[in-house]
Structures are given as structure tokens and as C-alpha cells.
Length: 422
Image (cartoon, rainbow, N blue to C red; front, side, top):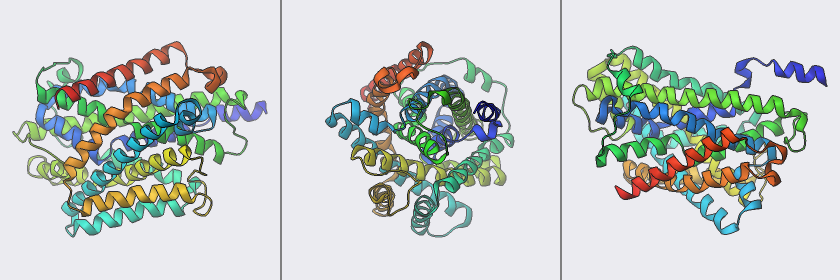
């Protein structure tokens, strides 16, 4: 046993990366790309500092969600069900499923628009194709084979690093990165709120907690840490490394997108960007064909990662609320309810797109609902993580607790600002 623990403690970094890396990459979905592009195009370097500011907050709250999943062996919805009133659970899960469905619609539409820019064709056909591809991957590929696919899909985000390398970045951008310049105007504050809400989203909490449970169940010999405290050192360290890398990677990509659009679109006076595909198209005459191709291809790649995460997190939350069998590791016959919710969220997203509803409005409503629901969910998570009845001896320590509650307070302030300037 000691030899096994020692061998597992020296696992290479790449092997330690999983739920945290995938969660961080999924945060840079096509909807997020649109928000970061808008921030860079509209305000230039003025909001670059916000990416650095949100990084430790994002890390803290995602570490908390991952620890809850690994310690208890249950996702967030199951823990909320056991320790909070049912009406609160149903309200939170309903809002999450609603926001995720709108987000899926916005992401599928953005992916279709980006592919049309690249190769031409019919966007409605592309929307259906991407939805079917996402569902096929999740329903018919066993989790041990599906998880590595998600991990490899995170490489699509390096397209935005490459895009930044082919444009000229002036030295003055450093000032906007490290020295915040608050502008107390409605548009600036609204965009700041949008960046915060895009970076810290409820579906990420539910997904990472549930993926920790999936990983634990798929690994022979692993058990929830409350039942197997001897495994705690290894897994809590892995969660820390995985989440740090995943969230820093996520915000690095966000920074690259914001800076690329700042040095190209904003510098050229192109400030009215509404979608990620529109940002890609606007880059073509300003930054060249190669930058355009990289940016547009990145939208498609990250969408293939984000849509399963959005649909999956809704399915985990709903299925856990009703005690249904859950998990991508189960077959369709074993988890009909779970896969039904996953399918319904994706199909509804397709129908929203095909109905002609404005994708920008869908994205706006998703951002509003995500922002509002994130605050009570974060507060509930922090309460769960501090309860010995939930976490046993693995309650969060003082530093993580303070940072988690600070992140919650920041999001509450962001929601208050959003409502004030709506």
C-alpha cells in the first residue's frame, strides 16, 4: 500500500490534469469569446486587469466545488438536496438548466456562424450537426474513453495564443494589465459585470464537482475521501494542481482574446462587436487571413468542448435532485433520466436557434440568469465546504474560506451593479 501511494504521488503533471483543465477550458466557450472580444474591441486595454483580478477568485471557488465532489462522492445538487430545503434546490437547478440551455443555443449558433465563415454552407445544418456530434460523444462513448477526448479538445484554445503572436502588441498594453483604471460609466461597468459573470459561472461548479465523482468511480481502489481519508493527500494535491492549471489556462486564453481584439479592432475603430463570429470576420482585413482562420477555428473547437459541459452539468444537477442514476460512465439503459435531460437541453438549444430567436438576446439572458444564480450557489457551496457533517475532517481551511467568500461577495456586487445599470 505504501509503495502504491508513493508511485501515485509521483504522477506526471499531464496525468494530474483532468476535471480542472476541462472546466477551465469550457469557460472559454463561444459565448465567453464574444464577451472578451466585446471588452477588447470596445474598451481596448481598459479591462485587461479584470482577467488577472478574477483568476484567484475563480481558482478558489472551483477548488471548493472539486473538493466537495471528491470528499463526499456526490455532486453539488445531491449535497444541496441533503442539507438545504427542497424549494431552494429546485429553484437553483431550474435556473441553472434554463441558463445552460440558452448558453447552448448561443454556442451552437456561434459555432455554425464560424464554420460558415471558414467553409461557407448552411448554418442551420451546422447547428444540427454540432448538436448530434455532441450527443453522440456523450451518450455512446464510455467515460474512460470520453474524458481524454475532452482533454485533447482543450488544445483548440491555443488558437488564441497563436492569434496573438501574429499581431503587433504595443508596450502600453502592460499598463492596462497591471494598473486598473476604473471608468464610472454605464457601458464600462456593464462590460466589467459581463466579464465577471462569464468567468465565474454556475455550470462550471456543477461540472467540476461531478467530474471528480466520475473520476473517483472510474478508478479502481478510489473512494470518497470521507470513507478513505488515507487517499486525501494525493487527491487534494491533484485537485489543487489541476484547478490552478485549468483556471490559469482559461484566463490566459481570455487575456489573449481581449488583447488581440484591443490591438486590432479597437485600434482600427471597430468597437461594435456582438458575436464571436463577427469578431473573427472583423479580424480578417485588419490582422490578416491567418489570424482570422485561427480565431474562427478556435470558436468551433472550444464549442465542441463547451456544449457537452453545459448539457452535462444540467443533467447532473437535475438527475441528482431526483436521485436518478447519473454519470457518463453509465450506459443509456442504466441512466435514462440523466441522458434524457442531457439530450433535452441540447435539443432545446437547437430549437431556440432554428426558431430565429436573436442569439445575442439569448446570450444576454443566459448571462443575467448565470450572474443572479451564481451568488446563492457560491454561498451554499461555501457553507457546505465548512460543515463537518458534509466534509468530515476535510472542511476548507481559513485562507481558502476567506478567498471563497470574497469571490462570492464580488459576484454579489457584480449582480447588484448589473441590476442597477440594466
